Length: 277
Image (cartoon, rainbow, N blue to C red; front, top):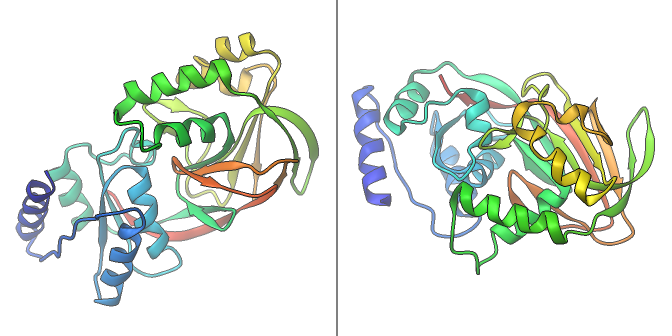
């Protein structure tokens, strides 16, 4: 598959009267290294072919720089690509990225890690860790849904103290999400009003009223009404601090990370150039 993708990418770029170096990742973190090397070689555009995790790695090397990112979506959720309107057909996504004029978008940061789409603590991070576990050999939305349904049954929410410039609250939350974009992927819209270029992040906190209530509110993710769920609050922020009595697992664009008892998230307005249409 990798060879076929590489050949297609080269062919499409050459049709645009340009040339391309195509490299394939072999391990976690490799995409960031390859993107850094491409910038050093003088690339005018770096395209990431993969899911939100691969896109995150490449973007982490390009943020705060002058080289734009192109996206060829090929992941389980493709949340960011969907919100940016990226064509799901690889040959069209490549051609459009090569021809596009760069625009800028915000980048989020939590625990020292950058994210483009969504970062979260709680149930979604728990699901991300289970989904990305080496023992889980099944990928795709069906596998993610299976892991998520199991987590809804056995996940134990924690208490968090959440502080922004305007408010401080202590809540027992199912999820604490910091969103730059609207959805996790596959149409699950956790922050329906989020915009990638408004200079802010959306803080979404869903309190645990009861496990049954949480279960029955889950469909709201897919009809855009999560903000009306009992115990859910959504507010625009530029920075937030989240504290917990125990170490927190969090995720950035679906990639799970072991954190400490205190995490700070912030927005970097228009920190990344992107070519998508």
